Every structure is written in structure tokens, then in C-alpha cells.
Length: 182
View 1 (cartoon, rainbow, N blue to C red):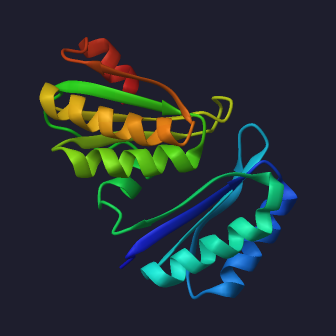
View 2 (cartoon, one colour):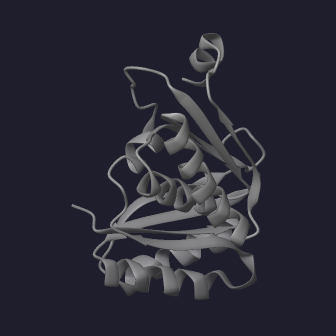
């Protein structure tokens, strides 16, 4: 079981590979993702206990130098976040839909985690920088008040990092649009 995840995002592929190696050598963590993303950026995501994950991210951040785009360590990541990254989470009933769009993978995942911890919502999809120019977004489902509170929390976190693109809440999304999102 992962107690924490950490991520670094760089604007250099070569430096990303170097930083990922340094992270794995610095702490006892598990490599979750190490790959290129659009537009020519590189991410390294690790998981493990909180202290080891934090140490790995610190070392990766130092190794990244001026190529660092974003980074985070999230202790006790919400259980619904990683499945929403891997694919679409099935939902029984579409209620209100909220979308938060960011300029970085790091800000997206960190924002989504904060959002689902802030209100009773389900992240149904998290799209990470593939084929959309390096931007990311996540889609939440729940009642209007909860989606609004979650989106505000997530958007505020991304905005504080200077990485918020836009956000929206649709109280009653059209069924065809919902199908397209899923």
C-alpha cells in the first residue's frame, strides 16, 4: 500500500531521466511512472512511505535544476485519484460535472486530490498531457454544491501555483456531452 506519491515534471527528457535515477537511488520508493508527455516534457512519479517519497522528490527537484516545471509530494493520496488517471471511473448517475484544467501534470494531480478530499465527489477522469499540448484536466461528478466546493478547492490550489488554465461547473450537463467525456 502506498502512503504517499511524489512527482517531478521537467521540460527536458534527458534531465528527467537523470533526475528519476537520482530519486530512485536516494530513497526506497517504487517507480510508478517515468515517461515523456506533451510537449516534450518528462514526468517521474514515485510512491512509498511519506518520508522516503518526500526525500525522493527533494533529490529529483535538485537534480532537475532549471528544467523543473512542477513537483509535489502528497501524503495519504485519496484512493480514487490513481484509478481516475488509469481510465474512466464508472458512475451510476451523472449529476453535476466539474472540470479543472491546468498547465502541468503535477498541478492537475495535486489539485484533483485536494478537490476530492474537500467534498463528496467522484473523479471520473483525469487526462494527463497526452495530445493536448501539455495541459491536463480532470472531471468530477457529484451534487452541485459538492462539485462547486471541490472545483473551487482544486482551482485555488492550481491558481496558487500559477498553473490554473480554467475551470467550470455544469449543474445539468447534456447526456451527449457526458458520453463524450467518458
